[in-house]
Structure formats: C-alpha cells, structure tokens
Amino acid sequence: MLLDEKMAELAATVDARRTADVDAALEIVRTGQGQALMNHIRQIVGAIIDDQSRQLEARQAQVTRRTREAIYITVGALVLAMAARGHGEWPSTGARYFADRCRHARKRITPASSNDSTLARSGITLDMSAVRAWS
Image (cartoon, rainbow, N blue to C red; front, side, top):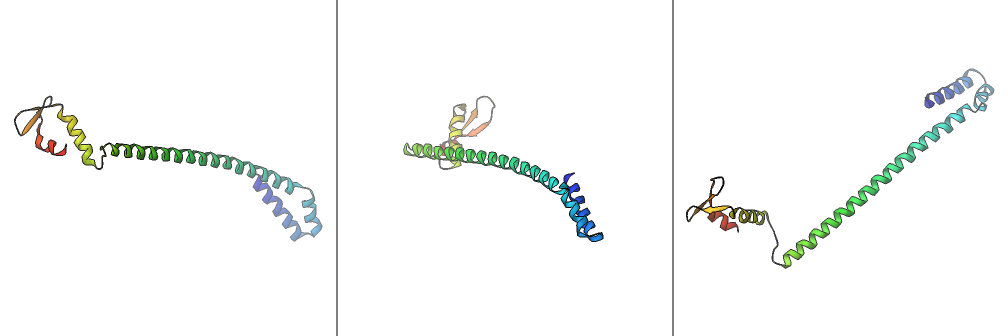
C-alpha cells in the first residue's frame, strides 16, 4: 500500500540520519522515491475528494428539488383550501371527514324503524340519530 511504502521510506530516512550522517539521509531523499509516493498519494486523495464533491453536489441538488416540490405542494394546498373556504366548504377538523363518510354510508342504509337503520348488505344496526348529528 502506498501509505505503508511512504512510512517505510520516512522511517529509513530517519534511521539513516540517526545511525549514519546527514549525507546518508540526504541520499535517500535525493532518490525521489518519497516525492513520487507523495505525488501518487495526493493524486488518489484528490480523486476521492472530487468524487465525494460530485456526490455531495448531486445530493444537494436533489434536496433542493424536493424542497421546491414540497413548497409547491404546500402553496397549492393552501390555495385550494382558501378557495374551498371561500365557497363555504372549509374542512376544519376530523369531524368533517367523519360526517362525509357517514353521508356516504347513509346511501347504503335502509331504515328498519324510526330511530335505527340496518345496513342493507351486512345486517349491522346503526343509530341514525348519531349519523344525522355528524352531518
């Protein structure tokens, strides 16, 4: 591995300086092996940084697109809600949803007596006064 080779070259240079003289250490440096290794390491690290930068830019662009989409959806929903409110159809709570479902279910109910009704297909008894209260 390149880092291991560079560390070995550095260790040899330091060891040569400690055990011999400065000329022995300089001779190792003058071979250019350490410089070539560092250039190769820099090249690989630069390629890694470039690749990660491209990936980061792509992720940032995706976040920007999704944020823009969320804003468009939110603004569109607000415009639709305001338009619906202008027509007197503002669904303010979950009760409104329940009332709508009850109205839909009422179409499938046939009266069995004055206070309760039976679902036509399943035979379930339902108190229509509760349904009327929600609608």
